[in-house]
Length: 362
Image (cartoon, rainbow, N blue to C red; front, side, top):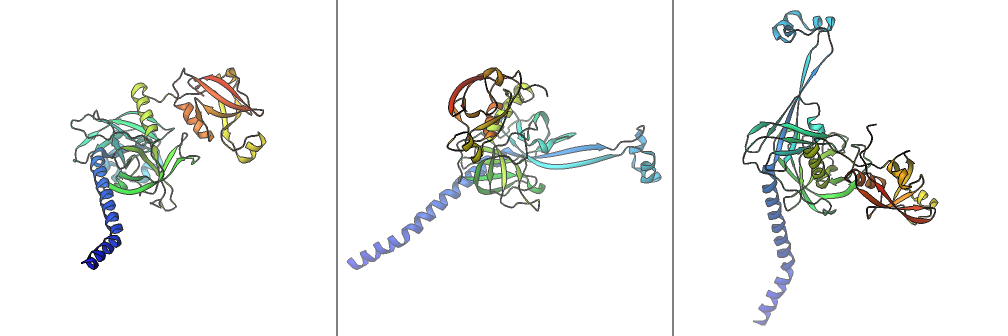
């Protein structure tokens, strides 16, 4: 009896890790299913129509008639410089972010489109109105008039961590709704040369052409990013994709709804990254901060006392690690607000206060 009991205990100890692992895997699978089921209905297909007209002479309705063109031939049109229309169709993705019908997508998905049509999972299709666009972040806001719309809640992209499991949902290659899984590979990716204001979430979840404008969601089924780009030598998935953080997308959306455009803050400096060599030159222990390389005459920065060669260490209480962080923080600060700065000048910290204004037209 004791021998049997001992054998049972040994068997239990041997297989307990396997049982625990299986239980954990099943729990993860359940979370993935719930997140996908919550998010899929709110991710839409975005199809666009672009009409390009080649330059030519005096337009005539006959020139677009196919029989007329067939009779005279294309050489006739080229010789006389008669304009031709070229129609281009493209596909992308979008995310319904409110029951009122607001949809976030990428600006490059709908740029120069003559018509934008949104297709829902339930096969309904609606022509979309472009509420506003922001090329500086590659975001656009659409709106459709429809009832019983599913929507995806915003998550806090600042709380997302490297290693978190995420799902990418979109319409790759126009084949239809597709879900892929991966992790957050990195945060704060910048200097990619993709847009003016960069703070990308990097993921290894498969993102392919057509996924642009789709959703990156966490295991709670919350939107934490708008999928926007891939790094690839082949044009297809190679394990590196980027998403615009949901906190940026939500701010841009609010600006577009309120103003029809994005109003960014500015105080009149040009900054650059602080390299280890520059940090040593300025007497800083580590290369953190934004080095001021130009102060615009008559700007709020000049009036606040900022100088070329200052290193901005803190902005409104937030530590600045790299120059792009300062640019993004200033851009999202409401116009008219006065913000405290901590700068490093000649081996000492100095506190200043600067007023944020709207940037000049130039």
